[in-house]
Structures are given as C-alpha cells and as structure tokens.
Image 1 (cartoon, rainbow, N blue to C red):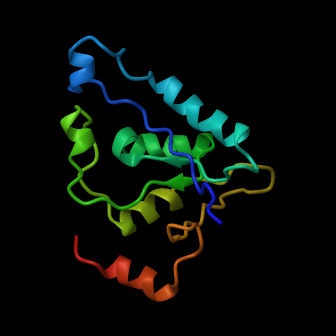
Image 2 (image 1 turned 135 degrees about the vertical axis):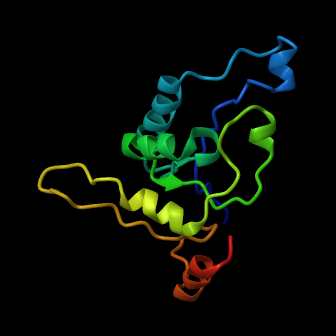
Amino acid sequence: GGRVTEFVPLPFVSKEAPIFRRGAARQGPTWRETVLMHAVSRLALRGAIDSVQVSWVKCGPEGAARILQAGANDLGGTLMNESISRAAGASHGQEMGPLLMRSLVESLPVDGPGTGLVRRRPWQRTTLYERAHEGRVDASLKAAP
C-alpha cells in the first residue's frame, strides 16, 4: 500500500505573492521559525515519516545546509528553471545539479561523539526513498546543465 515518504515544510515566500500583496496573509516565516519547523518536524514525526526535506529553492544553498544540520535529512531535488518561488520573490531556485547538491551535503560535518572530521555521505534516492541504481546516479552526474 501507499505511505507518506517525506514531509516538506515549505516556507511561504510572501514578497511578491498576490495573497500577501492584497493584505490577506502575513509575511512569511522568520528564519528561526523555518529552522525550528524542520527540526521539530524531524522529532515529532520520527517513526511515522522519517524523511524531512529542506527546499534549497526556498531557503537557498546556505540555508539548506544549516537546516540539514538542524535535523532535516533530505535535500530537495534537482530543478531546472524553477519559476514559482522566484515569481513570489524568492532569490534562489533557478537550478542546482546533482554535483552541486552532492558537494553541499559532503561539506557538512557529522555531529556526535567520536566523529572527528567525518563528513556526510549523500546518496541519490528514488521517489519511493530507495537507493537509486548506480546507472541512474552516473547518468544524472553526467547530464548537461
């Protein structure tokens, strides 16, 4: 049967959103609220939904890295020419290829006793949260931007 595979707390980008410009919505969340939503979601949903995804489109690469360190364990997918968030006023989200995503994750230290200088090891997944086959990973890494 079906199951929920991930929770993706997308922060509202209000800057140019019509609902905000009409005065019918509050400004989007603060940075602190965004980080806390991801961190608390990982704790609260543990065992029910094990993957909490951060959207680099909404939070930017640096923000996504910080949120991965705060508890998210999934970096949003590769997008090409994303326009919805940008139209709402986001300053990120045009494109992030697999190599850049891999580099971002590998740059993050693993926290915990005895981890020293260990870095995170990213892996590509399918939409069902299974490891992608080696051929699929190789093809994605070699794809033209």
